[in-house]
Image (cartoon, rainbow over all chains, first blue to last red; front, side, top):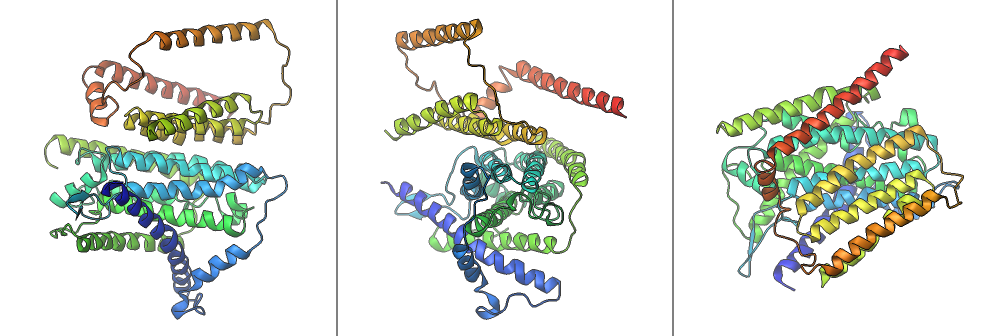
Length: 340
Length: 167
């Protein structure tokens, strides 16, 4: 096996390890403590310093709970749905660059798992498969609340995917490539893309909340109307997989947002060396940016009330989609005019 | 070697799932099977050095169109097919005859052909495809765009007329 092959597996293992082992337990803690902070409560504070080990306790609880499959459920699809929640979320991270190239034993190793022309398109394609998890879960559960959640999810995620796609195109037009490492390099050479296209940034940000079904757009769950929406019938580890899938999608979408609009792993005016140290610094910068947006997710969840379904659709089709198209046109004009 | 194994797995998967699409009595299951078919075909595109077409296949067909299929199926609550026509009519025989003729021709073509099924170059790359679309096939490409727009306008006109009737 060549160094490149080994490196690819190492990068894949690292990315999946961080996402599964790091993001989910930490976010569980952040979500609870932050909501407690905002609601003037204490939150979980018994396990470990500041309750930091709460994630471990929750994981243990999920594992030991009885695994229930409702009678009347479609067993195959019922078991498939939680897996479908995790797989697209994990694979989309593979196109995000997270550091400068590493010179190792005379070979140049790119710090993203799947280098290739398709880059951002591949991200959108794999990300669009996430909706099948919700659809399967709702259909297989044999429960009206679940089914309603699925119907909502399918319409919502399709609608916001369009606006998000146009926003991504707008961000990539000045770059002239779908490659995300090219997008990072362009921003390093010029300026962060958020400056010329703040509109595209806002559209992408709002659409990412709808794509991950987070408040204020968590209509597929909507506990005040649908019990728990598409995952009403799920318990124990299977519920935990939906949970992890949601957090991991939030992470990868934040990572794409930072890569497209906020320079990814780079900082303006700083060149990271092509060594292990440089890679660690690059990954640290990206992680810091992603952390901010993860906190924003939590912040917004405990601040804003839920949208009504018609408001959600109006916002998606009549506000975000036209805005993203205008952004695309302006970017195209600026690029052709040689200003960007 | 790896390519042949991957091809074998996904070619068989595509065929089997396509068969399930037309034989399964539950329309939602059929659609889910179609998802698998399209995904397998996308993998075959990758093997043919057409990563861009593969990505579009997943993005457009698997990620959008089939989700809409499922949305409509679940919204209209279409139930399982209960009764089945088991009697072979003249139509059945004609269908079989036509299909046999078609596949016979296909088999003959592959049997006779000497070139094999090697990819003809990097036509499937984003850059190559874009250059072709915006030079040689520019008019065709734009015409397809207009055609799709006409379909959209027609659909929205029909629904708006229905709403007027109802109100």
